[in-house]
Image 1 (cartoon, rainbow, N blue to C red):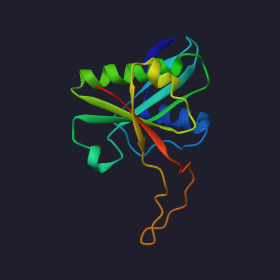
Image 2: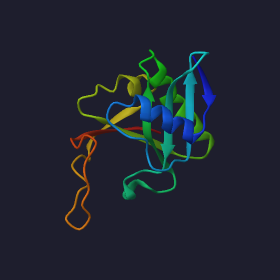
Image 3: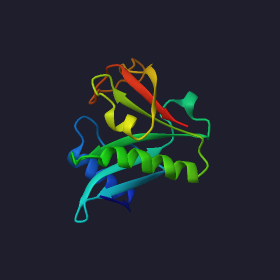
Image 4: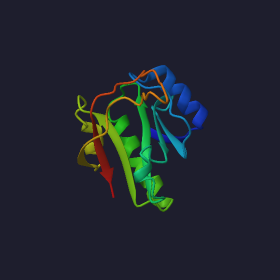
Length: 144
């Protein structure tokens, strides 16, 4: 497997085709792809933290990571995202997983579990929304 540059548009198309429970994110700073030499087998998209309180200019967030199931592709992408963020001057990179996901790829890339965070619906009476994604508790991970 080798890392490769990928446009946000290409990353979003891959996510739309392969992600189990999310659509492509809205906006991003950059994306990285990983290929098996013939085709892209995974992508990571990094952007500003979704939680406003964490958006301190020194923190970035993996807003989407998606693979076709190729072994070690996810951990390779998590590690590459951190190297790129460090090179850009970020001090912290975060991501969230579902409580039902073991976080094996995140751990393998050297991240640490911070704890439970977030979850719930974004639907509000003053701003109605239809939830199309899992609304359960999330696990917050970081690498410094």
